[in-house]
Length: 114
Image (tube, rainbow, N blue to C red; front, side, top):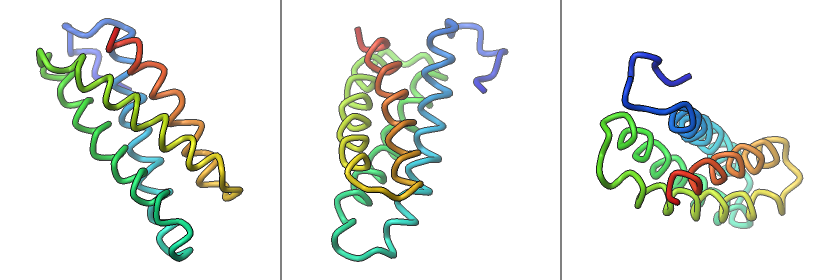
């Protein structure tokens, strides 16, 4: 949960920050699990790592009220959607969880980018 003490964040921004951090966690877990499944999971691993990096960066930009947070929100939404599409193709529980969390993150990031 986003720090309530960060007074420059609206409730929607706090939700987005929380979703970004949750997406990063889910993607780190998914990437680690998929890494042991061979080359057929390579794209899943790559996209999960991209989300983990971009989502945590976006959360940090929101926390410090960066002027570039909106731009990064759009990138984060795009990467989350790509990762969710990839994870949806796999039946593993970690992939399905990751897809769900990434879609939630993409939705809130898309609203921050608008």
